[in-house]
Length: 299
Image (cartoon, rainbow, N blue to C red):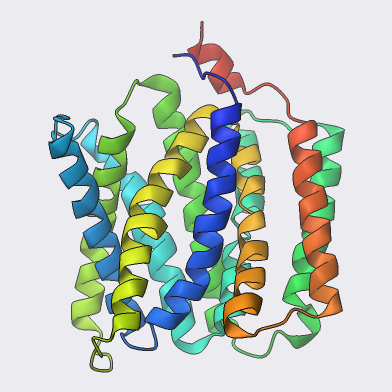
């Protein structure tokens, strides 16, 4: 299976930064009118239904391919990431939770080396260091607070996302799959435990306002269905560490969107952190090494 040109994957990565970065603002608005558990379950379930509807319209086969592997993908990618990050938001701050969740690229680096054989070059090690400094500046460790439980849940969401990236990479390295089908089924499999949690955990009554409906529409179609499809497309075409490091631009977009829409103006330290992350992204792309899984699949 050939990987194809990198340009479409890099374009998808940029689109993801805009979609997921702004989605933090959208979700913040949405959970003001609906419990976080219900919001996460609904966006995932409706997002899966939207993709299935597209598959029917395009006359794609609905039967799942390799359902057991796709189940594990959905468990970690949709249920794990969304579930842990939403649980963290119950008692943790939204901004801090978002930044801690985006430690995913660094978990990916740790997993991709032993499990996928993706080794980094010197330039990319420097990129990781620069990006870590940027994240630390945005996070501001001196003001983390004492909510260790929420912090650990947010970190678990990043770890869960990283595990799902490795599962997806192995899946695409060995088998030719329909991306729409994989995206739809992993979202449906992941939505099932989220719906169960939403039903079991009580929350405040939902206020069906226009703002909530807009937030649900964006989060369902763009933030879930389109975004997860683009993410799997990126993983199919780029090395796992490049895809993971590329996601570091998402919280930067989130900070800028919150500044523009919610009046949350970043300070000078956060600005330096964003510059460092962008510099790290440039370094990691310039220092890319060949992906052994992509090379072997092209033989």
